Length: 215
Length: 215
Image (cartoon, rainbow over all chains, first blue to last red):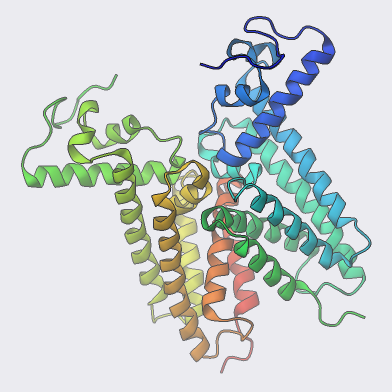
């Protein structure tokens, strides 16, 4: 049974002002992002999400219509967070395009190390759990991968223009394959509790697709 | 509440002969393999495992000491099943070594299609769930990947001897990277409900690592 030690609304008395309501929703989404990134959907109960956000048990449905409506918002928030991370790296003109991809991998690997490789990828977790998830999540998660693919493909096209990408395959295909390998590498990093799978995968990716004939 | 319609031992009266005991344990392990391959660890309750095996609710602990002892046996059984599948393909001298890998992918893809891409890889599912699993499973699952790696590396060494493998990397490193990509591809196949990720990954693997200078 949880106790209220902070200045949060008490059981049965949720926040009333629009600002309080929004702050609580934001806190719950943040808590949901952290838990789904670490544990996935099946292992995460509503109670576990409420506690770190300081929201009393009975009032979850004051903030969200259903667990699934909540998870849909968590996926969107994670997708936005990750899209910003990708943009930050893939648009960083202080590195050549192929090295930007390596920089993204380094940042993501450091992020996993910070949580001792307990937290992986929220999208990968839910994708893995697909057979137990409500059907609408499939379309939402596929769209997130498609978005990541498009962002990476743009960076690869830039690499191609600069002669830094080999002609082995089209940027969109390479981007699709990158995210396949990436999710496999994140899974192994969680298992092995090291960044070795992420680093090896990224090195191999660059070795394979980086052109040796760049100007 | 489940009902007994088949000729199974009734509640509170588990099988008594060593043969019956073994048959029940085998049925439970099979049921566990199917469920963990489809749903993973967190989403699979003991009751869901008992029902398809025709074992009444109260008698699980007559056959296994604990849920974790049971899951450890399920992992071993899956590892053995999968090792046999790999051996069957990787030792098939009617194909050149690199094509044997493609044949394995085709068999695995057909297996996923048979269950409408609901069932993926038991080892990948549990690896993904690592942060919520009892610690001893980590070592067991890492050992399974290591075993798969060793089996694939042997096939790649054969390819190397025949000049069918490029000198890009050592067979053990290529094998390690294969299983990373493979798990990522299985995850995407479950999400997209097609064998496209498996096939694209396998084609790319062969394109990259197959030598063009074979005799």
